[in-house]
Amino acid sequence: MHLDSIKIIFLVITILLILTLLFSNRKFYDRKLKFLLSSLAISLILLFTIVLKLHHLLRSEFGIPNSLTYSLVLIPFLFHFYQFKFEIIRTNFVLLILSICFISSAVILDLLTDGKIILLPDSDLKEEFLRIVGTGLWMLYYLIYSLKFRNI
Image 1 (cartoon, rainbow, N blue to C red):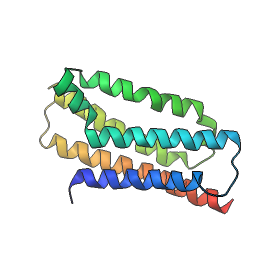
Image 2: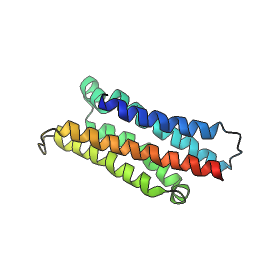
Image 3: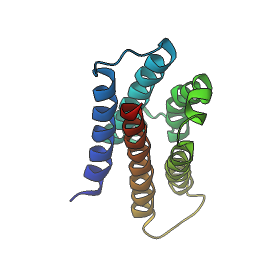
């Protein structure tokens, strides 16, 4: 199995979990509905970025530096985590923090190796591993979130 497929599968499962919650027969209070919609949007952005390899596409086609692409993708994430910090804190947020740490580590490694600041053998493979672990933890967070939500 190609390594990209693993990340895509994790993110598609995450999106399906969120959609299942959104289309359940439960009535949401306004804040939870907004959190789920924002989580769906963030997961779609993550999927879109990984599938298209957005930073490589924008760099090769338009000469946009990876750092700018990553910065622009970071904005909705920061907004989501700031806007829903209290909702996130009431959940198993450690998984989400670990997920973000692994994905961020992959981004930092990508920026450092693409910029020739550091040279690591098999850096692309290391980046892929970090992204796979990060997206796996992302999926696990939403799996646990949806299981707890269904039991409420």
